[in-house]
Image 1 (cartoon, helix red, strand yellow):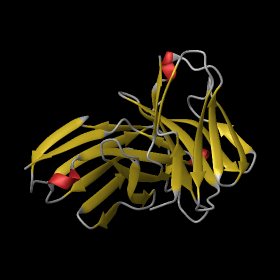
Image 2 (cartoon, one colour):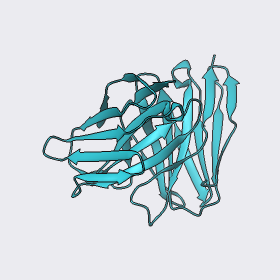
Image 3 (tube, chains in turn blue, green):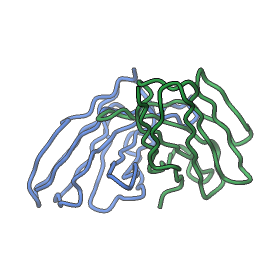
Image 4 (cartoon, one colour):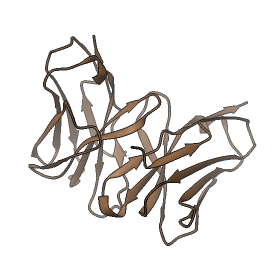
Length: 113
Length: 112
């Protein structure tokens, strides 16, 4: 199994509070992704990174920011959480040699009250 | 917007039967992939088919790709209870290299 760790795995927070989700990989893969999964929407790309300090927006990036200061860590921040950001968040990684094949973490379930 | 759309949304069959799931997409692609997700878990890669391939096999899985119709199918033969999961197609659009776009998935239930 690819070495991907997401933390926290579960979090309940209140509207307006900041939240940071962490993705840590031990595979030294170049590409890292944050997706959210919601019923009826499948997985939607929030942000992705193609190298240290190189990030770009995905389909649903509003309200989210990311940072990647080291190859192994990709942080997703909700500056001021809203109830619409209640979701399951998945981190994924992809290596140079792979043809876009993604390896997923186990997910972080976030509930915003 | 979703690039891939799976059909059906849910499928329930008896153990031992074959299961077929379909995926349609909108734009030209580099490749198409299928993933499986067990309840409460992350997605797991099953198989990748390139845009210049028409069919690919992996164990009990058979994937076809028709680029003229912008569609793909995943066939699971001789289904087992352990195949119960959600299945997603994902496309790697040419203009979005290394950015996979997922469909909404097919929920497959194998009844013993």
